[in-house]
Amino acid sequence: MLAAAAVVLVSLLFGAWGLWAGLRGGGAVGVDSEQVARLEQEVTTLARSDQISREANLKLQGTLAERDEEIAALRADVAFYERFVGATAQRRGLTVHELRLAPGTGSVWHYTATLTQNLNRDASSEGELRLTVEGTRDGRLQQLDWDDLRQGEDAPPLPYSFRFFQQVQGDIVLPPGFTPTRVTVRLQPRGGRVVEQSFPWTEATARSAPDA
Image (cartoon, rainbow, N blue to C red):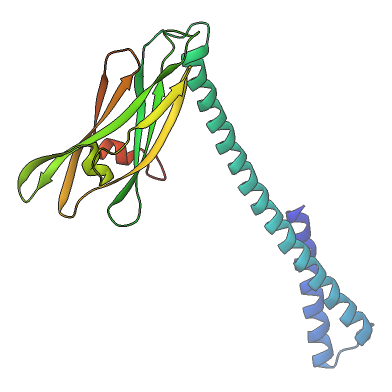
């Protein structure tokens, strides 16, 4: 469609140029000013139609790219669910499937911990979550406990309760001059053993990057 429109457009342009050259040279041309104006209008209309077609194609390509991203995300979600509720899913107890850290305002960091378990599918996993962060400050090793990260004594932990998986979110604050290197998620189930999993700070923050 675009190629045909381009051919017609070029033909009309050459025709209009020939008319203009003939009129300027004083030759006899069997057209009047109305015909010239009509040809110019047709050229303008075809040019506009070509522009609209190009814009529509670009918009369609953008829409298709968005749909591809949505389909890829849905497939990833399905694969994630099948790992825990599918017939062939491997049975695992309480664990931290993933930890993401994203920078907030100032020294605030937002965390998202994905907790999973499918060992006991008929019961809920309930308990409390706390974080600790290891790093350096003024050239010395330092560990920030939950109270330090929450900037308060006896800061309440975050509760969790789920059957297969749950995302627990919140904010922590790092003191000025502190360089974090590792973050540990500590889960205290009701009536069970404590579960601790550590993640390099660079790994947890990289997962929150736009292209991660």
